[in-house]
Image (cartoon, rainbow, N blue to C red; front, side):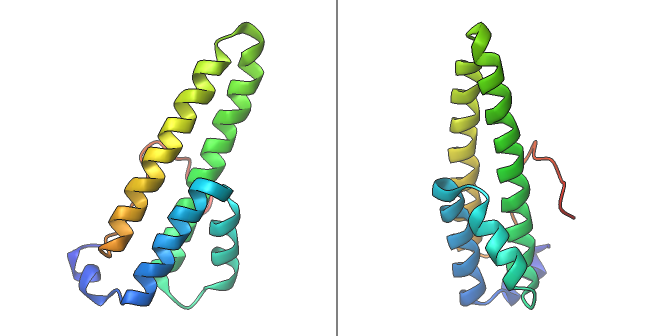
Length: 113
């Protein structure tokens, strides 16, 4: 979605996308999944819910890998790094959605197209 899309995003869509990203900080994949399954009529919200869901799945994989690696004491650093990235990317998504911009998380696995 380019700059032309920014003008067409209404305030309700911006607020819904903002809530998805803020909810992802606290509840993981659940807000993105709920909105993805329910809100099919708004393309902007659907796109941001897919992005939040993809990021949540990627972060969950990182947390699991960190927990497995914690046996050799490296995993605690991995869990910490994934946690910081999760917080930062969710805040970046919330800020971008508050102004109606399309946000794509770098390094996220695109499992849901």
